[in-house]
Image 1 (cartoon, rainbow, N blue to C red):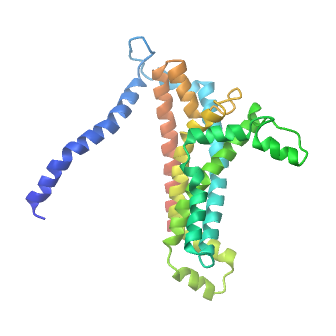
Image 2: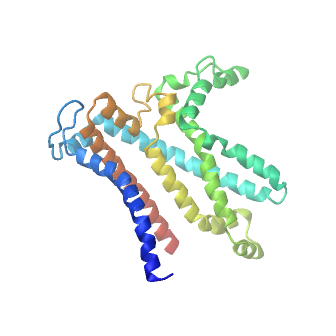
Image 3: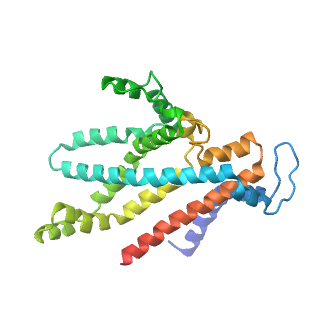
Length: 293
């Protein structure tokens, strides 16, 4: 391709790139600018300096929402990683015994929770945990246990949200890890077998290190999504009881659309963005150091 052809290619592509960049950048820059104004709905905006950021960092409701969001992520994500990796290993071993078409059907069934709309997922789990009439209490009654109002107390509601999240996101981890396993070469495993390594030693010293890039992608994407979880929780608990499941995204929506304080909501949004960058950056730093080691 000549220099003129390459230049002509960019001439045709450049307008689309400018439009896409504008659509992505403008809302972010607008929100960032709003975080430095007293932007109350229905009133003219005025400069506020860092007051919104200071208010957000001292707001107990916002800090509470950040705390329970990080707590939920710390509990849910490791469980999802463990179950996703275990499931992927089982499927890899089953490839030697089960016909491919049946494995394909099984994979489709496992992935199903991941493709259901989050709002529908929240409604399904709300119906399952409905006091006296839900599936959970029916199963309890079969073993003569008392009904439990799962969503009526803080601990039960948080545990229910974590359980729903695990049900929804283990298939996502499974897909990433299984793809990583399929891409691995057979040579390291054959060498481990020749050296007499046990299954656990092979998993710990060969499989897990080779899967590190796939696990890093999975944990990064899950962390990002955990910090913006909204639909399924709102459909399931609406952030309650009290503020027990008011995750940071729900608190942001309350600040913006209930209090109509878009300046503070924008500052809170960027604080969450900073937390997200620190966490994901930390993952890649640890992964890079571990890879070099």
